[in-house]
Picture (tube, rainbow, N blue to C red):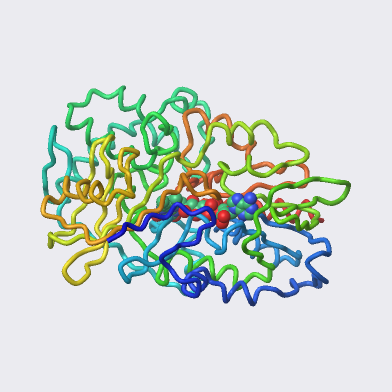
Length: 474
Ligand SMILES: Cc1cc2nc3c(=O)[nH]c(=O)nc-3n(C[C@H](O)[C@H](O)[C@H](O)COP(=O)(O)OP(=O)(O)OC[C@H]3O[C@@H](n4cnc5c(N)ncnc54)[C@H](O)[C@@H]3O)c2cc1C
């Protein structure tokens, strides 16, 4: 069977028909969204000036669009892909609904909880593992999950020691700026190097942090430590951030947000330039079409900001962020249909493993689905290599099929979830959240709280950006 690997330029899945893709993307909502905004903000035609143009229809852009139209501002959303959702992409594999990007919520993510309640969307608890497979020197060993997670908890306490103080208010990451001076400059690898770990404990810790960073040299300690404290400062809390799935898929909540908004959404609309001229800002698409507005909200991933020509140019903090990168450079999520074990296997490798993290998903007749996060060493288009990688954890496994999404090769993401690099927290916040003239910035990559790897942060930043845009538009 030919492996299914998504490295799309425009987000179109070769394996999913256009009809089902549009359905998954909430196209019905979009089609009905061409309407006048409330409070007399009726919009004559798309060529007439808009109050606000939002670039990007991910969770951040969707939040902005809903909030602005609720406040009576005419709003146009321009999205490069043929679907909404961005780094959230609900699709199908092995006849099942799967998430190729963001997949889970965690308890305590209050903005997401509010959205679920608003649209009466329930959640399903993820599959609990029945066995945990962990590195053990040159091989792997299996143990009951409670025993494994207990040991990981002890190691995490050591790794994150001090974070309860330097992130005593984790939703306000700069609250103890004084304490951050000595830790924000550390990479994950630096922090691991400070600990006196046995070789196996080193494999466990480095293998636990690497899936979030691609490589421990790249990610910053405070990036992960903030999430750890947001999750309550325990391993169990951190683990539970990937425990809940919204019924209908991750795109369903965003579809509901767009359905409520009266913004006009144009898909297949890649923005190439944003230029200020007098009272208006002109936004031009790759096809040459141009729109005007008083305010523009840039709700695209930080790693893509340099694909748009801004006049005047972006401030240094923004250009530095793009150059350094915020979206992790290796972020490949692979769905695996596996036969050969009745167990629900949780597995981790050391930092260099081809699959760094394996999570059990639903059981299928005669098999099970798994989600894997791969390391740079695995070529996901090589079926034999993928099967061999699974067999490291489950020796009798047979790979029935797999589908991988390589986010770093995606034109409109240019990376995966966001993880701050060493020093970025102190260097970037709060300046990167500030408007620049009539330009406003949104996106999980620049959120304060659950930034980067969480839809919660995209909503947080969207709410902030909407407030800023309202002020600038009046
Ligand atoms: C593999 C993976 C797993 C993840 N797992 C989780 C998880 O389990 N839970 C969780 O909460 N979060 C998870 N995340 C993170 C989450 O998906 C993101 O934080 C969130 O979706 C980001 O939303 P956003 O609106 O800020 O950006 P995006 O979703 O990236 O939206 C930006 C939009 O801008 C568009 N765009 C880009 N350039 C242009 C242009 N020039 N013109 C027009 N449009 C443009 C893009 O196409 C995109 O639609 C994961 C992410 C990845 C990649």
